[in-house]
Image 1: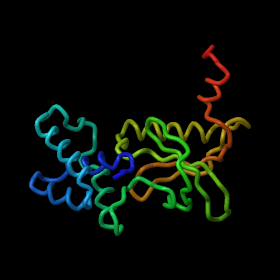
Image 2: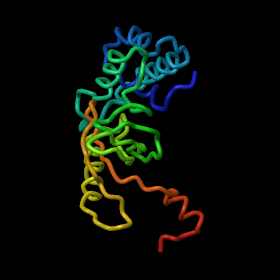
Image 3: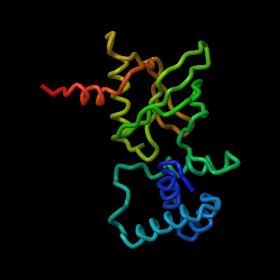
Image 4: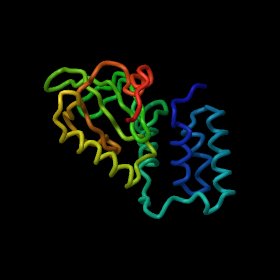
Amino acid sequence: MNNPPNREVLVFNAALQLPASERTGYLSEACRGDIELNNRVAALLEADKRAGAFLQEPADRSPASSIATAVRQAIVGRDEFALAEEISGDHVGRYKLLQQIGEGGCGIVYMAEQEEPVRRRVALKVIKLGMDTKQVIARFEAERQALALMDHPNIAKVLEAGATETGRPYFVMELVGGIKITDYCEQNQLTTC
């Protein structure tokens, strides 16, 4: 079965938030018959158990994991198991996601359609699931603030910012066509000097 990226990580992280006695039942519900996924997550849980305190959350991570909350909301709120991570057709605020167009270290960029008060295509960047630590959120918010302050014809303008239903920050920018800047640099053999 072809699983969306991060599904295994989501289920694993949510299972870690539960008492060991509840994990088997949770896996059955979360994996919904996907035996491969169930086995991979069970193996990860066993490895985590053997690792002991070595893999514990860092001290600055908030005790209530938003990942576990998001996964539980996805299980309860939809007929078939779905991730709290957005997919084409989902809505983030007043934006309908059309397709993923990019991915970086901490965020995913989607082509989206603003539905109100005007209809237009935009780029929407949302922080990745599992990357919602204080440090990453601070970097993400600094990026969106820096972009919002820039006023140059060659820099996409930030149109709006907000948070998803699960609390992950996002921002919306002008959608600019063309090739990725890294591809352009490689094709033209540009240097950093």
